[in-house]
Length: 384
Image (cartoon, rainbow, N blue to C red; front, side, top):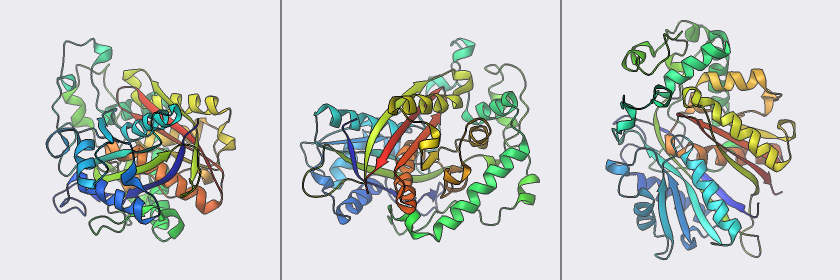
């Protein structure tokens, strides 16, 4: 794929509550902070010809085409086009994939792409879509919240509570270690005064995890008509990524010439749909597709950012795929740091580039899943 990543940056993630570390800002201010950060690192982001943002909650503070609002607020040139994508929790990666395709086609030479989500301002399901409650849809097509999909997947796949406790604790430990490892946070930009990840739970232990009760049984009662029988609820709040605020942004471009040199090349990008009743599996499908397109396998990857959509996904990945755990989510994942929905894919890509730089690695993978049977993945080659 003839598209390069000149840089990719992210904010820290703030708690989605009124006193959260980013809650006093507007979403366009998060994006503007990242545009400033890209410029300070030697890029020319305001000369981009496009700004594509992923955002799930496109109402209220995030309505009115938040990509356009961010373009205007950030001072990106007037001639740049801007639009917003909602592809649920892979939206930020979808935005990057779209922009990379336009670059590869020669339609634009430079593009900004990523995502933003401020769940302190626009809560989960704030758009109140009919889809969430529409009983006229065929049962197989009815909306099922991702937490219930995760519990059903854990039961269907035989993923034990102990396995989920283990991945949740690993995510916390690695995230705390990353805060003290400058190389792993090199591309994290301080916006609004928030320096570090705010959702971390340093007090978490194996004992405290084991004592936590399942969290989503009451939610299942609201969706009983769409579910195929009772669920063995296994996920606790520690097995679910915290809701939070955050943003990520990449500067993409064509073949390098003079000036700023790219950090990585996009080797392949893939999207996937899947069974809406087993929505969290589509990320696996997208991962398999992108590796096939790149003519590589998991063993070739030096670092992997596999989205911790819920604990079941990362536990299944470790159990079923030939992956070296030492290469996976080395700076911790969503279970520790949080999940700002539309921003997630862009944040993971920025984290991957830092992880590759830290180990002097060459090849990396991001894979992400969303509710309803949605997945996206990208393979990149770091340029030394």
